[in-house]
Image 1 (cartoon, rainbow, N blue to C red):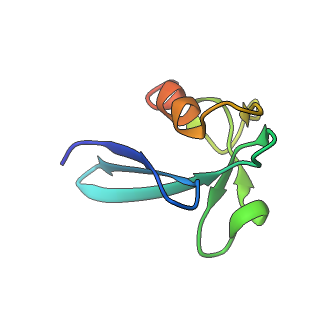
Image 2 (cartoon, rainbow, N blue to C red; image 1 turned 60 degrees about the vertical axis):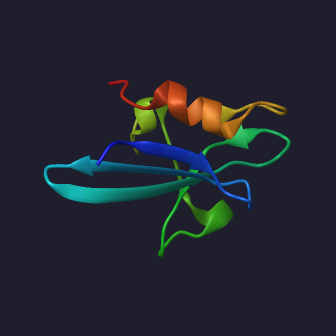
Length: 82
């Protein structure tokens, strides 16, 4: 399957892709008025999510989404960067 990136009705962004034969589902959130991008998962919901860094890594320079900026655009820009 191909990679999909989409915005949900709740304003989160879902990134789905295949890695090493396994399907990966990642969900991202950021405050409406701008702030750090966070990854939501079962252990880290919403604002408790882990901060995401450049290239969508979990370590490095923290990624942010500005006020009025589309989170989906930020995720698309960072997807595939190393």
